[in-house]
Length: 453
DNA sequence: CGACGGGACGC
DNA sequence: CGACGGGACGC
Image (tube, rainbow, N blue to C red):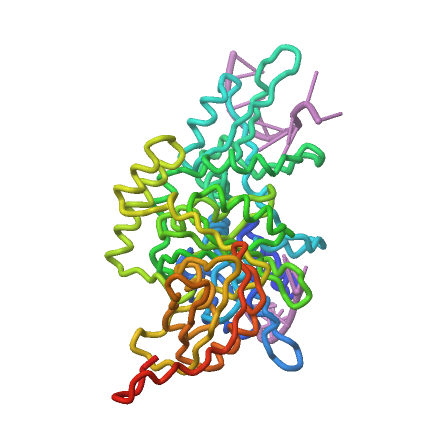
């Protein structure tokens, strides 16, 4: 071989086998070894290439990860999309890389990766087809191409899976006589689907076998979820989608300073079970079709769960999976499991863009600042207030004055309190307008000892 | 005779 | 928004 041939082979290997290379968008601060490490559990990595600026050698936040098999790359994509690799950095985006010969820069969509085209005996029914290919993953539908007039099979069929990794696995592992390949996407115009149909489609993900693969490696379960999307979704669409699971109490698209969507939304449920369930149901869900949502637990510093608690949660979530879609028994299961998913529907609706919740300061913290809050027309419940006022950090306690429409918020840090005041003063939460002011120093009613607030 | 190899969706 | 380097077999 001459050198031209050798280099050409290297280039060709990037797409051999097809769809075995990932295109990863990361924060610029993420190092190559961090990426290699986090992707290595999904298969045999043949190469990792972090794209750097030619002059500065700084990462451009783009990385390519080459796997030996397409199924490995697809699985890594499905599992890693939307994950936060280093605390404080943006969730990563993961796609199958465009083949190097392709000039397209459009993302490769799941639509193009989940349907296979196979050759089958003419005697095969669609049921036979399904039974043959279900061992590689849950099938959305099968169709056999038939003669339009006689109705006889042409010996060709399509199998649509829910996940790219399943289609890739089928192509890799099924009998070669089926000649399985990825199907070319249907010609356009046929793909329109009413987004409101999403609710009806969610239940197809109620697959216990998927559930077994629940992710125990990456972090704890929390009531808070982070959803990442590439498509421009509205607040209303996201709200409607996550509201399918009972117990949603907060849902907001994250916006930047210019009010543009950053492709992320924070969702919080009133209980861990609902959040676990929502993550299982909606992570990887295509909404709109072709746009894969990434849903992950968001570590907001609250509601951490011990390993023992996780096992309990798995059990509970499994119960909910079977229960939620099966009607009347639902609420009973939730009650008997100790979760009040349905009862606590205290969503927070407000005209202010709230940061995510933060951990409370320890109860014995020294109070450095108090806020005085006046409610109109009536005070908000303490749990709602805690949720709202904790988001600026160091909140120690919410104190409502019984019988009055006022309360005090104790903070362990002055700056946090000031931030809360500046953001929340004059704002409306759940229809209640709030005046937020610095509290007057407490009255010295006793000379025996100093008040501890 | 019957191996080989081929291959596309009612918008 | 976020798309493609560096290195060099063996005659």
